[in-house]
Length: 269
Image (cartoon, rainbow, N blue to C red):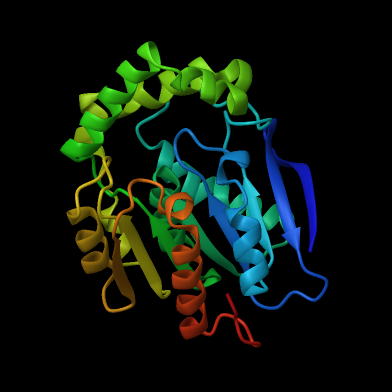
């Protein structure tokens, strides 16, 4: 596989940092990874590369605006920042890179954006995998963010994030907690309208010990999508199952993609 990091201009002065993982003879759609609220290309660690290798599919990982070397985001974040990311920016990025068909793999906020993107892009999305996605603000999410704000001030969480976000760390953290703890945002957040428009096979994953989301997030997403969706609760896993249970998640996704028949040759983990 060939791995390349690059900047992709999207117009209006906006450029997005991307990493592409490509096979010499690619088959099928491109895996597109959408990171969490405090995540980045680097914080996916080796998971995208492992899934690309196991599935034989090319992969795209990118930093949203305000992350990594991508253009600064407009602050404060508008209430519809996730919808803008999934409905507008994601298809713009795929168009700019000449990527036709995609398999969306989203974690946390990235999972919510993947749901919106799958609803917005219709048949262009061949399969959807989310981990710890939200379609509304629940009490565990809000309590978890409030607790993280305390830990950010009183523990070494900030120092750990500095390794990945550098000078943007405080701005990024404050932007995240400010919008999520805004009661107006909490009241307005409802992505259920996108679910009925999702046409592709979907696997909705959540760790049984996820401290940022109630189990109903999964059951409500699956009910909203319909028969094409399957919910998975992973035992002994929290908010980041792809890092906590990597081998198990890889096997789950490979089996799911095989059943979806997203590529011509077999998928092997």
